[in-house]
Length: 505
Image (cartoon, rainbow, N blue to C red; front, side, top):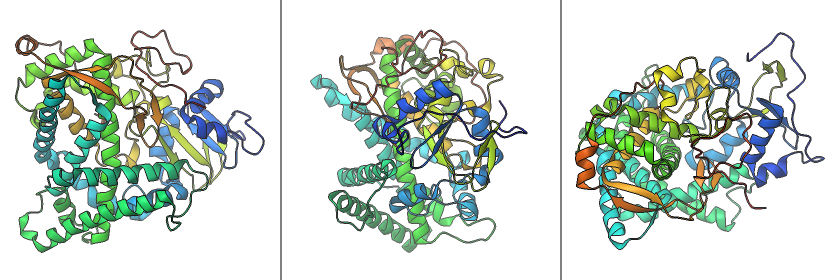
């Protein structure tokens, strides 16, 4: 399907909605179900009426046009940048145009693969420390919440990689501060008329107090680096960012610019990776055959030693497992864009100022590009089965020039943590615990993911190292009960994994 055609039509089809309100109430009550139903009924481009008309975009050709071919015409909406910048400032996520290009040039070198090898050991060590703490839970026969555990783990990893800091003593306060920031941003993004932070509501007071906690910590660490520049330009991510100049202007970042980039990494990097890891824990319980194959590969490649960056190319099935988890639960399940100039998409006229929602959750489940889209099938990402699939049919971290700058960091973290989990424990979902997908900034489990633990035995370790079937992942840049949502033209499910349920009225 082409992104443009010679004769533009007036506008995409869509539901009628209510007078004046259009589909606004449906968005607020259950956005994901509303979008899936509209895609099923109206196709790959859907126009929603309402106080602010919205266009839903799901087809890979259209995503490619917006994210890559004509990306300069499609910045974030000003309203999005305004609401997010109250927390993260003017960092990579909230900057546009030449300012974004300058920041990208300066930040990107710190996240190249050759710069990341030193952080693999931090990731494996933090994962190992978490698993050591789990021993007490296992001995008591108690359960744990994988969502909470992965949030704590990813925050620790980010703190250690950014600042060489072990934040164990401050973990509770800092973790609460990050959580409050995320909740505040999410509330602002779904609110039609949010109050300015200067209005002394309880939520605003909590947000401002949390922001002060993070600001004081970040600025203190920046000042320490300024006082001791001899500690090395590559000791941690903060030092790397401080010593990397814009290759075109030679300018280094100011304290405020460093603060904004660090806050962006904390809020964006922590939440997206934590959400994905929590769904990976769920899949380790829901997909025993794939889990066993992944564990077999881990012991074949690693034995009992911690994973390193050098091991990642040999963990081929783990790469497929992670890719399939990202397909089903994309961390950036929906992103907003607003064209600066009139454009055409799928033969339709798209006026400047339109509010576009690019929904990768639906793209990743379109049966035109995915066999059995609700099934868990890591081998769909092998080279043979990926042949002919459009590049933008799979965009867990968005795509084009504005793709996630920390993509390699995130994929390395996901794989290292997954390998560490498989070496130590079997994870089992607590019987009867409800798994309900909640579409916020990321796709969260509304009631958490409560799991029990069973240690991997010595016998399992000794037999798991037998040669596993050879798989060849495609060269891509990314790393229960059936779903009640009518996703459209899906084939019969053989391994359904989507736990999405409608929100309660």
